[in-house]
Image (cartoon, rainbow, N blue to C red):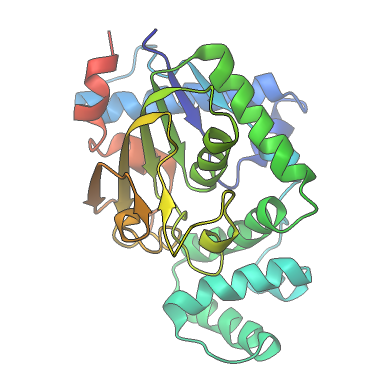
Length: 278
């Protein structure tokens, strides 16, 4: 089978809510969008007439809880302690903050409001709560998300898995935890897998001597990241993972730097996907 499975990133709870709390409905709505986005990249922007590229999108956002909604990113000051720790560790990497947690939160909130565009501030609101829910909770949400992704991969037996954002973390751990899931090509988009203090050290299995590894049953790993994507820090996964076969740095949009729409539609996946398309 030439099946292609997608694994979504952050901020996707609304699909579950809009589908009447239906996982199948949320996954179907996301698949429709992924097909349109990929079609744009594969054809250079030709109209989409229902062409199908993605077999299924593995949906797990409902297992992490609904992301906090607020009118402005000052909501970070009301995050739980684990969420705050993740937020501060993330923001330190590009804000140059070296102070304690309380002072850093105060400073970083103002820093984000003053320096980041609206989309980046919106991203910050979603990023820390969902990553914290996956990486720092009691383990139930993490195990459930991995099980959901494993079930979709096992059922579809895809040759290709495309994992975006937090989905690359869930996919990486899922593949390590389920050695029966063989994948010919893993494509990670805007991945935070290498993000020090936030993600990298918390991965399962833990990195060894400062290095993570490509899951053994993955034949080829391609990483694609925008140079300005604040989730993909560092943009190059080859700096901390062995087995990344190819990497491509793209320039998507200085404001819209992380969405799966921009990644799938940028054309950087074309040469890698065409051998698996009809």
